[in-house]
Image 1 (cartoon, helix red, strand yellow):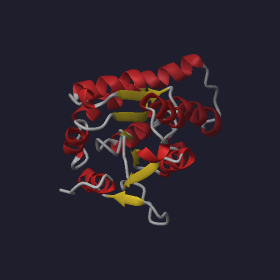
Image 2 (spheres, rainbow, N blue to C red):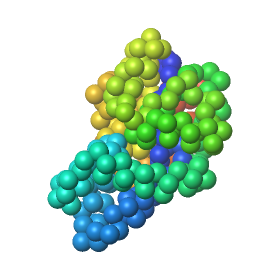
Image 3 (spheres, one colour):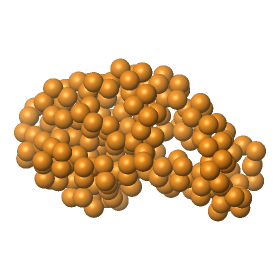
Image 4 (cartoon, helix red, strand yellow):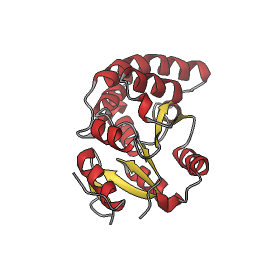
Length: 217
């Protein structure tokens, strides 16, 4: 099998930031304790949805209030400070640094995330991992469009690209595009799907090496 490029999600694949964002959503809407469970259920079920779309849905459909531009801007201005520094400082997923170091010397690596573009670039620069990536795609890019763009840029067929994600939404994106999916089991599992899924990036690295016909170590 010829693998020519790898695309990775960020939260829950490269860094252990999922619970940081979950807690931020709880804190952000703590003034609405009667709705917190409903808000968190929606948030957790839509991991790849942009935060802006989530804010609009939560305010209009759960809180039953108007979400104009000023309201959305106010929510986001409170959300970003809750997470940015914590994500810069949080742990890497086990094996993530070694994964990036190893494959970046032989393949173009890309990020595709629902995190806003500017914030994503700022975080990976602060974590000093920006040099590993040939390109970074954050919101407003949809992951499907981002990966399709990457395939075009690299002139590769879908079956020559690997997408590493940690949610069923990520799997569905890969499935729709015909890209090879490798799951990182995190807060969601893939037990009922016949796919390759592993607990950390050490195992994901070995899996991709095996696909490429190399030694797994």
